[in-house]
Image (tube, rainbow, N blue to C red; front, side, top):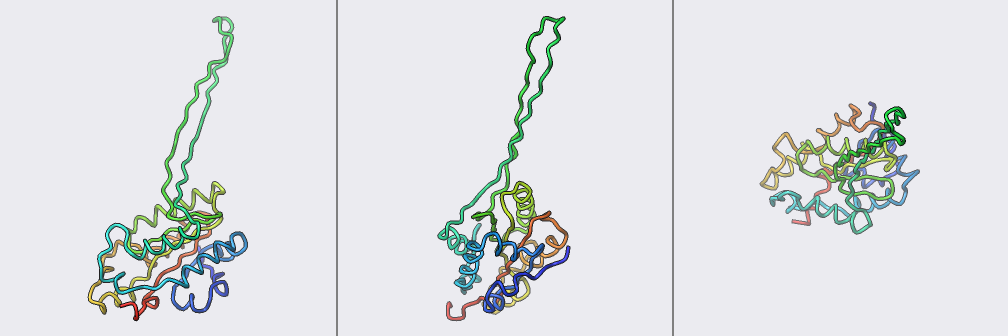
Length: 220
């Protein structure tokens, strides 16, 4: 699947200079046409975000400070964690056999519930996950969730906020701690092949990667 570039001109030059963006299926153009308010809020969060020294040198635990800060920024704008569960009901009707004295159909009902994967942030018809430095298997779950949400008509597009790899490692080494040395965590290098392969199905997807250019030297 070819990458598109409808984000050019839709985000400020400053944002495009600080982040690395890739997309499939003209995701940004679709967001601008269908959910302009949500796209504006994403732009606001990106504009206000600064990468601080503590984000790199201090262990983050299960959810690091970057993910917490970004998720909080979206929560304050009305975005909420969401989960799409699918319930499938079926009804089997056995017709009566009069010679056996049966008068009414026999009905056997059954129901199957499939629990979905939680999405970090949902608003309007947009899904957004923050994958700063988690296990890269999260990307497969994200893309699978987007496919299901899109096919069900719940969302029209999705966004993954992640990070770059090489320049972030260089930044970590410069600051005295490299938390990005493992090859099995979420980053743009891991996400791009999945997007190009079409793992999100028909869902338009925009990936926004935090780069070392987001580092605030004054935030030491």
